Image 1: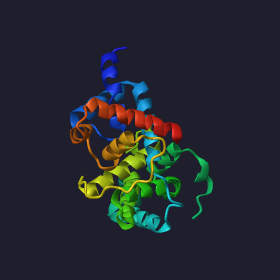
Image 2 (image 1 turned 90 degrees about the vertical axis):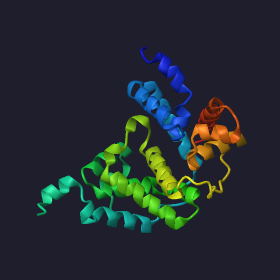
Image 3 (image 1 turned 180 degrees about the vertical axis):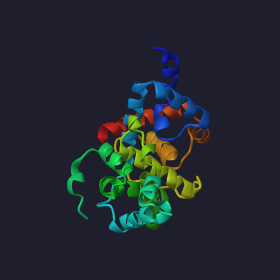
Image 4 (image 1 turned 120 degrees about the horizontal axis):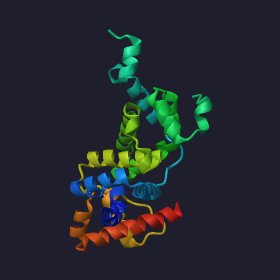
Length: 90
Length: 155
């Protein structure tokens, strides 16, 4: 496999990559490898899933925060470009 | 709020619907993952109001650019968590002044938990942790890998 040498070197950094702990040069190298290597992508996905165990959700997501999100996305200045085109804003 | 038929589909489908402009789909993503996103932001920022700001940022960002989510490197939940972490770090200014008061992280030994918290919740790089703890960078990365694998077993 073409990516073997890079693969071996990068494998040990995947956990750090999943947590955003690599410096720029290493992060770029890992991302370039991930474009080519499905095995490592799957590894990163697993490691990221594991990281979601670091916190416990506390009950239901609050309605007041959703209200803020709902209001923010409706702000006409934030409308998605295709909606603006279809609504014919002048 | 009537989410109707949206309620039970996979997250990837919801992201596609968000891309088409469905606020109901965004609401469903919020219903599924909002509590976890809020919990991470609260853990990092120690303040409910600031954490709510982060949650808003993360979900508005998802609305504005759903294609930024790359399903190949993880679930929507983990993507949202990483975004929440990054937004929280921006607010913290990467300063160390707000150490999260962590609940016990099941199954990890102290070194693994400390290192994982330093990188994920404090925003330290492996290089910085290596210098701070005076251990080789490779060891830092190994601990992260072992720790995450153990967390994965417990989740």
